[in-house]
Length: 225
Ligand code: 6PG
Image (cartoon, rainbow, N blue to C red; front, side, top):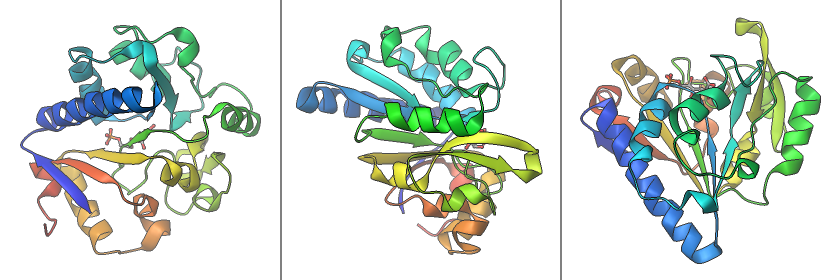
């Protein structure tokens, strides 16, 4: 595990935002553009606020999403809406370069259409980890864990809903993967992930390879580093 520990969730978000600004500058210099997939959760929200103050050439940034709930873009539950309110409304990413997952549509069709618009390879996938070890919308013991292709419609029984999600294949094919995880509530699960407990079925985040983990002290408390 490559782990970067910061004192508080705000520090974690600021560090990741600074690294994102640096990664964007490097990709733009090398390839003329930077593609990043955002996700839901509380830590990205803090990171969006930190990113607004940094120097990024947003005109060269292409924004995607690693997962989405079964809702339209105006819903308070929409990951797109969270990113829009927290970041996209405040920076100059051209509208044509923001690609949301269409959670309001038939999930299978929406997943297939989204897979078709993805670039060959994303530069960066940002992810969180839920209390149950899920990441993106790949939840424990769901069919999505074994899905092939790039994007899957994943039925999540415990939430009684469909989710759209990147597959592990897509997540692991990106140039980089960063996991942003904060709070004491995640410490036990992180320890279990480090110990390999339950495998990918039990803790889906274990299916993400070669990630950089941005943690706060509380989340990292039980790890052996
Ligand atoms: C979502 C997510 C999900 C999230 C984790 C962590 O749509 O909910 O993409 O994978 O990142 O549940 O969320 P927190 O950071 O709020 O704990």
